[in-house]
Image (tube, rainbow, N blue to C red; front, side, top):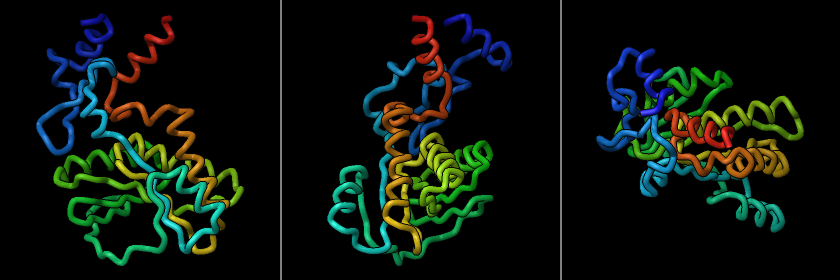
Length: 212
């Protein structure tokens, strides 16, 4: 055990690292909060991968259709008529059997705490989707808000980031929001980290890089 791990345990009044580990959805495994990323198996990493879904109002032209399909794992046209069950939450949450959709505001920490509470309260929900219906269309402030919403979904452990086109939103505006997801995956490197919010495995990796 490293010195900083001992410090964490002492300050928390705990005797075992396992007491700090977070339960994984759908089983009795825990995520090694104070372990390195290398201790996480490939199968476990797949449990926390996220993908981008784009939902458009109508069929895009060939140019935009191509770029959306290259940038996102899934592109849909039209809205779903499926009726879900609203869940009790400070956020807008709708459940569809083993799937659930969440819409968040810009209160990042509160939203993350609420998403984790929901995941613990409904362990039989296998796929949590962060739905973004915000429109940007070259508005920098709205683009910042879109970034916060998507970060909330990724860090909160949502398996899908669903970007829905607004009724009056241009395809260029949708593309701006898709680019946010691409930046989170490539520049922020969030797509390579399992359960970003889980804890110190991520931070210990960063510390090791700094020490070198």
